[in-house]
Length: 394
Image (cartoon, rainbow, N blue to C red; front, side, top):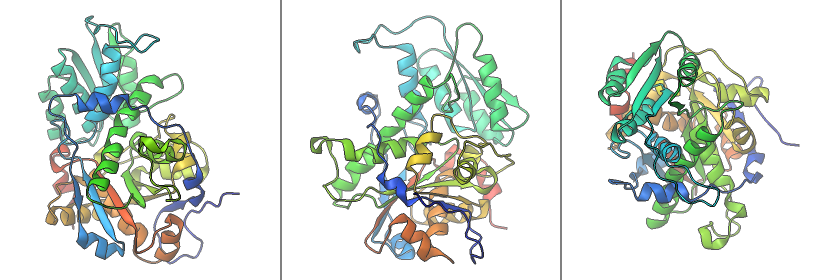
């Protein structure tokens, strides 16, 4: 039977924590390669940078630490364009049953979505580039400058009093109008196809990491830390890394016998819906407030992501705005421009590998001094305008 842990009774560490080492044995089908080929053909495409930070490796007592820097992805300061571009392409140029592309649909289409910032801007940018209209719903807590950036892409923006979940409800209602299509990275019963396409688009990021580690002669990752909102990026990570055992060597598998990496989800303490779902063993919603990690301020996991995360995540933790602020500052000093959501990966790894109880957590993650860590920095500083005043150390 799998052993699952939350905060240990009597533990000196108050760290929010869940671990399930048996997740490394779980396998699933590999994501299709179509999205990566699509991205590679886009004007201006290039893999985002993978920075090695030796000072962090020394601090965390591991061999090597790399940060996947999504501060400049297809002209936008966050990774979200990967999923949105692939999904919108499939919406506007669907395939026949034999995989042949139909001509691009030239009917008026309004792309509708809800966002904490980055996803909405990506949808708005792509709509503008394709000559379509976009309608974006934003909840409380999204900085006015981020809203202005979405409007600057030509989108109609509706502010929704309340949470991200409330904004999603508004977008769902608007998308019921004729000529409207909901482009959401969160799934629920009856709405799975487009979120699944978005997750397929995110897989490009992890394929790039593999190639970049190989190019610099680094071992494959022993731990990958992923910031989590509704869980779609983490779903892409699990699908990518847990599918390796079923792929042929010619497809780029890691050498036989090399262990799959541990996967760590990191959330804000005030919006840790995946951590709470893992603890309860069922998809669970949590109330949310305001956090500098605005893009992670989500109260309900995606129904499509949840079973994958439940089976394939090794661990989850939650971090404070203060910890994210420290990580933002330290990454900046190392030359990496990360917003609070992107820096959450570093904050989460620090929480897991340092402090009281660290030996047990390192053991649960299967890490030793020879490990290679990859931190996914999902956004740059430009993605979350105004975050500096919300994360400034007090």
